Length: 292
Image (cartoon, rainbow, N blue to C red):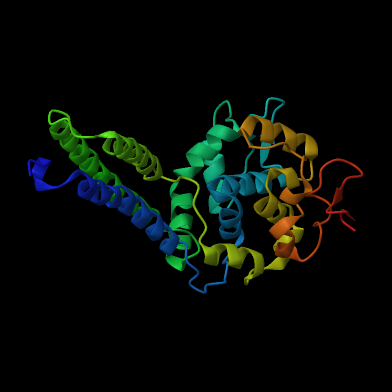
């Protein structure tokens, strides 16, 4: 038959197409499985709430908000944070103070360092044990396996192409398949990178919106920041400065949905907690008054 490897072109193209799709499909299925709803609806505390609402960055912002509120931390005009004694008892706030030393530190760098701090790592591990956050090691393992398979599949395609060209066999489909495999290889390489923020599971999202946690937190400054971010901090001048220097995505008060609308409204069952999550004077949340 004079077919490369004894397999006809159409048969190889079909088999190669399966090999090109299957690893990616299995990696996606693994991640969806890890995000499944396990029925857990209890959020233990403030920082668990912050991590589910906005990842490790929100955890840092919540700790910073608590320190600012009690004047244990001072931002200058550039947004650089400086510690003021005494050292707080809260472990997350204590971690922030330990990282804000000497001439101070900006919020962007502070978030990056806090993401690697042991207290945040322990928090993420606890969320993962509870099934509220995706187990990072298992998520990465799925994509790493897919990456290894795609390396082998790509090498197989190159070897087949090297056999087909001298025999003057049609190779258009194979070349197209190789391009697709190369794209899938790049995607899997990107997806297996570490997620330093934390990905909430379906259970985590449902627990955040409808689960068992102290709704009184939503009336406090730290609770507002945990739920909605630094734009909810009462001192808007400080909030704007920190958001700009922290590299926070999006405009500060460009959308009411980020602070009051959408699923966030279900956190507290009202439009805004004391108006602290609404920017600017005279603004409203979802058509209703703030703090009303």
